[in-house]
Image (cartoon, rainbow, N blue to C red; front, side):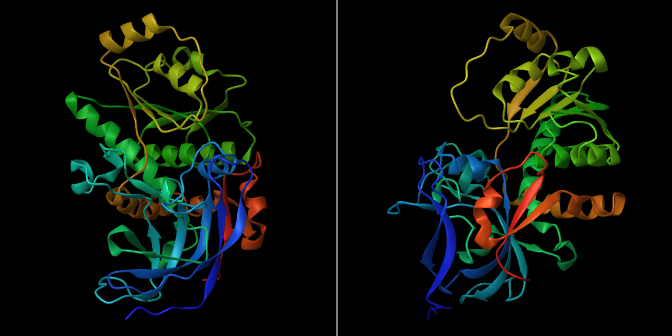
Length: 366
């Protein structure tokens, strides 16, 4: 029999497509139904998707609801488990994945991040409430257990999963040839750019990062400590990096700027691969050197591909790299957490600041 923990809980919701609509709502606390676990949320990471949804740029509520509970990066603790749940017990730390499958062949194969039909849902983004509340319920298939030692920074697992997939897929694509990459470029110094740099450094690549922050910024110092070189695009525009560096084997784009994405195509070296992870909201039009890019792509065997979201296996890869990176650069992940904001001040958390890398909204104590 399902049991109710308490009557209601607090959550942060928006009215999709209505700018500045983030507000606190009261919702029923989920029940411990068969095959489900109830999570108590500890903290939620804020990213550009959350702020853009609150700006009214996109977002889709669940069927029958006029609002959407946002938040898709969460560290939680198992509060209760329903009948039939195995592998999890109350007190376990958990990060849940984001996307839920539809019935396409890829989704049925466990790869909802490669969905063909597009009728998937995403917690806190598209058609399903997210994690920015005190509790949520979930099925074990989408729950990733977190070792207690990773508790201080485990909320970063979701953004790490994005670059786990991006780099894994890039290397998978390049199995088409003999490929021995030595030099990579990362565009953007937010969480995706920094975490991507970290993975590339673990692979032993020479990494050059270009972004808007000045070299003396926290982002610049962290990237330098990872063994990468960092340049501000104010002094080193993207259109000139090939001339500066020579052969570029891999480019990871994490800016969300469509102009940068197309500029990067012309900077790839022979046999190079470019992965686009940024999503551009809007309808910007730009002029591009189409003939030049076409010739380079064809004659140089270059590849450009997009990568979005990540399925469970990339979260599990992230757990391994959390531990490997902490051994190599102790304390590196906690340096990325630049603000912790109490739950009641959620509007301050959604207000992104230039010095922010990762802001966490603290929902409950551990």
